[in-house]
Length: 221
Image 1 (cartoon, rainbow, N blue to C red):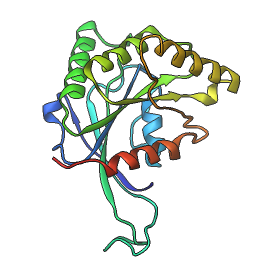
Image 2 (cartoon, helix red, strand yellow):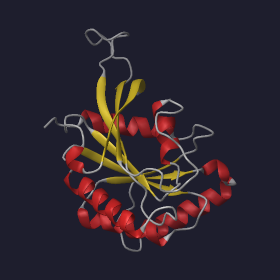
Image 3 (cartoon, helix red, strand yellow):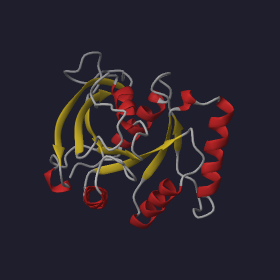
Image 4 (cartoon, one colour):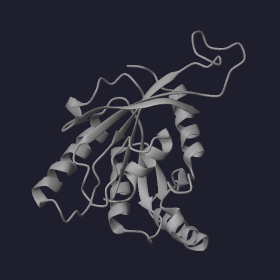
């Protein structure tokens, strides 16, 4: 997949305020300061599409972005598309981080939790949820609890281990393997997962290829 364009659409306080459910949509979520904005910028090839911050809890709304992309060139071409490629539109949703953020109140965190649950369970065009895990740490209870909740909701998801450039390779491998091993204590099968680094641009192609495959099976409502 090659990104043609990426633009911000809207920020929504509830799933009902989200854009029309016409394009396939992929949401990104994780603990505060896990690197969501950096990953979104990496995937879209833009530096400041999603605003990054060192302060946990910065994302307070559901931020939507519209992406236009095309897959590999196809012989015979797509009508009206340079290079003979058929363009596809899809959305990215940047969700507030779950868990503790010292800068916000408990009430605000509860509101975020309700907003996130409503979006995940009711957003009709949500194809897959990308759950970001900080690869620098051993398994955290809050991540495992959230993933188990997704299982109860029967939400399709994949794991994305971020910030691999902050570790020695052996530490990343140990932490990822331990996380998957811990999941398999309650799950019959581990979900797909990817290793990423915004600094080294690692994982960009693999995730975009995965999204491209899902786009082909999306049925417009």
